[in-house]
Image (cartoon, rainbow, N blue to C red; front, side, top):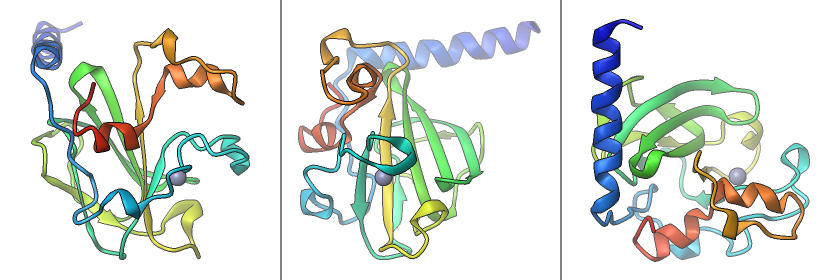
Length: 175
Ligand SMILES: [Zn+2]
């Protein structure tokens, strides 16, 4: 591995881990949305088509509503896939990956550092949300598993990796 790349990775890891010590207020990723903008049973809803269970929440808003980063982070994915349509993923403190799907358009460059509240795209109905009301699919992945979150529900072991965004938004905290 090139030295420069190594140094860059160490700097990124330092930024991410140093974030662990500071309480980070979570921001709602959809401008103007409230807890009424999603169904309270949205997270881990079963059955949920090809995904089996719904591992995030769907925040409903008018098409074109700005989607903002709920945390400081780095854009690690921006592009398109079949189910998600136009998607963005942000690597944020605690090494968490915040994933946003069904965007109408993306406004974020791959590899860029972004601050909490920066616009990363706009609410839409791309991917398998075509023909449905516009909404933002939002899920949070932790690569570090939290064993106490394991449940007996369908795919309950995956709860160790997929956190409940509704909890984080409502508590206004990532913890
Ligand atoms: Zn969804």
